[in-house]
Image (cartoon, rainbow, N blue to C red):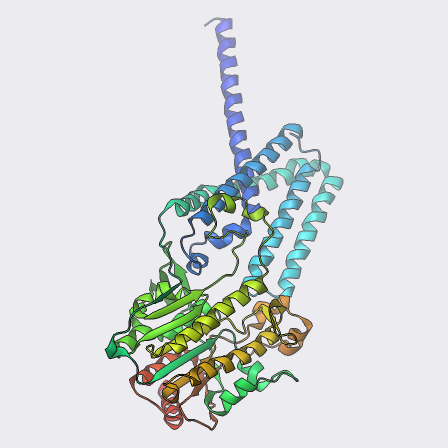
Length: 528
């Protein structure tokens, strides 16, 4: 081999090495950009592609345009971040400028906001939010101090470590993006918001059960430690003519777990959904498909009852539709990023930039208005014997002003509590106007109490005073029998999940207040 051949071979090797290094560098920059893009969209991604898909479960399907918009927005965020990192890498290859510190600070701020917003749903305390803010400020100050005081360490250690973290996180794009694309293009069912089926003459009722669930109604706030100057005359009147269970033990913390528990009679620890919105539940550390045909609705139909529900938040017509003769449901709470299932793909791509979404108080009041209208229709339809109403009261956030009587305005839990009282009075009036009023048993309950840890970070002064730093976990349960005029109390602890057995007994045969107290006493003895 000549000297010329040796030189040529060396040049070729060097070129290949440079090309390989360049490709590796480009791949690394791309992964870093993807990691930064994921951090920018952390809140939107978190709610839409966790393994349980519980957010999808509570939405009206199909949601293809939401997932499509999210996938494209994630791609755009990754491309934007990749371009920024490429420019910084080109003009500051040795990391001498504070540009990387600026990028780190921006990503820390955005990530901190996402963590706090996600944490609010899980009931984080103000202390945790303050801790996240403190860590964010420490990162901001630390980034600039490192650049100012440890310039060589900043370029040799800090920046490579930060970029390595972004690249490692960026690998997640390899499963996140394909999942979003798959969810965007796969066929999804089309949910029915309301339906009414013909009731056979054999199932036209001779008596009725109306079961009213007020979401987040607190035994403590309504009866035991009511705030001064807050009259609740309708709840007081109902209490004076009913059997009240004063020591209810909740079946869970979240509505999505409690309602299936009450309807099924077994405690549901957690739920998840497949991509078609089908419910699975965890009981005793074992997952299974939710047995809708073993719920009170199905049992009632097997006993010869007609069934109907008007409900909030849970997809009643999808999950329980096969066992219902009358159904309507609604849930307008916003999707992170302002995405909307009813909007086309192009609209959802630009959704995060749109700021004309309605306040939560307006959406909440619309849900309430719809459900009260449907409740009236369902109560008036006396072909339906077993009626279940799930109303969005007094669940935060507040959307009612007791002083003006206006809906859709920013308010408090206590304001919603006043509206709960008014709503119960309206429901009882509608029931009293039916032909079967004298043969109607009315049950008023709640899924869980006022979850102080869940909402404390957003309390008004009035709510802070009412909560008094305590979380009383007792939900409400009262049962009013036809013609009952005196109050009765069951003071022994009563697991809320036993409401299922109580209603099963009422479906089998009528009961009196004395009979209910005897039944509850026997249930407590059996549990002991």
